[in-house]
Image 1 (cartoon, rainbow over the protein chains, first blue to last red):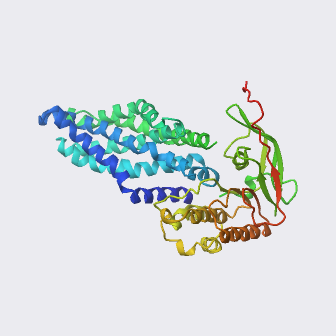
Image 2: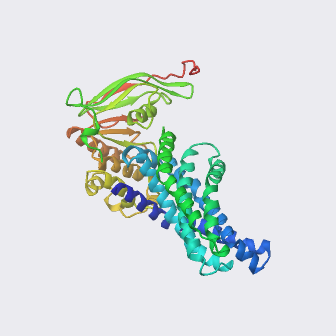
Image 3: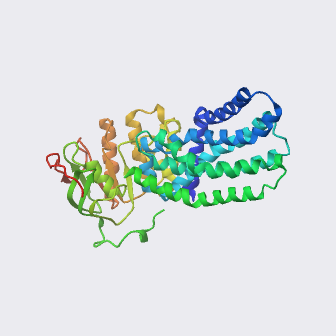
Length: 221
Length: 211
């Protein structure tokens, strides 16, 4: 457990040390979201209606950005060998990296989605539900993305393969997450969508680190 | 992390490692052909052989990073690993780089840094260290582990004569405490009573397909 926390601690230090890399996905998220009003026109009704969907798609894409380097930096400098040999179990190593990914990407995205939501005209009363759904969604994306990153680790053109693997897997998260965020606008209950979103998260929670651990072991072998 | 119960009972109390008839393919190329060796407490084994003879592959197989295609590697104790690369993050200080190894290991950081003459560099970012200093920092990680079996892949790359002497003293102290090591090296190490294991070049062996 101490090793697990030490690994997260090290990744957070690295993220703060190289702030530009961490900020890149955040800026991408905000820029990407700001492009929609330019393309769709400034109609407040249209933007308010599309707002949650725009935020969900942009968050999904922004989560993908840092995945490429999640494990490959460790593989290239030999750290992964050490982690596999002397660190915690492979699945725990993978889970620690996924947790660090969420803390450095998912959490800032959540915070940034508040101003982006307001900019797109999402009502203040709808924001908590959007954030709650996004919190579960970004966690699932970190888990799924970490798993895919470990699978393509060491493969040629892995960076190209990665989105092709993650995006189809992420569709249920996107569907149920966006559906839950629209409940406020459509005056329906978000319970069913949130239940299914939570189900996605709790399916990913044990399975993705286990699969990723195997991927990491294969990559160093 | 690892308790003695994680390892099988050794056939003799001194035994740390048995490698039995290990064969490894890389793709369809034979890299190691029936390698057998044993290591007892206090041993220092130098792996020799031409470039591409599989020295690093043998170390990776012994460490467990790679599974042998046939044969068996039995370790009777925990191991410490020094690979080709130093595994230091350029943006973190030396102390931060070694923090994880310190938490996982049993030895004191101050002693390891002192033995390798790194104490004055503790708070320097790794990107400012010279390649020899980085190599010593990576070696400090091995010392921190407190593991009896050391697997060292070219530990002396980039080191000056004084640093190699210092490394030799650390290795001798480790052997005196009942540790053992397998080392690949191209320069002579200041070690007494080493054993050596010659790996033949298998480049002449016809490649064939695994069915």
